[in-house]
View 1 (cartoon, rainbow, N blue to C red):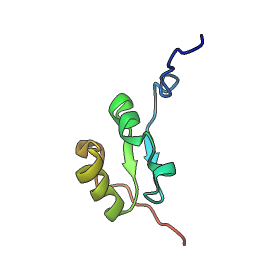
View 2 (view 1 turned 180 degrees about the vertical axis):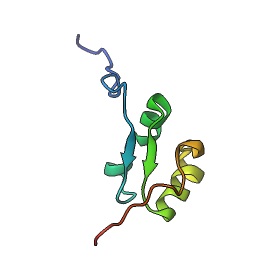
View 3 (view 1 turned 60 degrees about the vertical axis):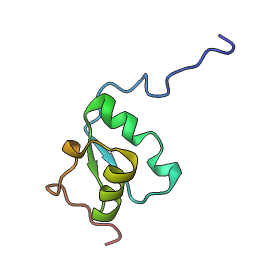
Length: 73
């Protein structure tokens, strides 16, 4: 319907991991809202993970240092 707002996350009910390679807005996007909706864990580098929690409010219980990510090699 015209003028009706659609929830962009409506189609996501199960997400296990959110994988972020860097913090550009077009990659980070709705990751915090998606994590809160689905309980998905964040996989990223230490610096971005820390900033996601402190600045954007990513749920800290959904991130940890038990999942490693090797970027570029």
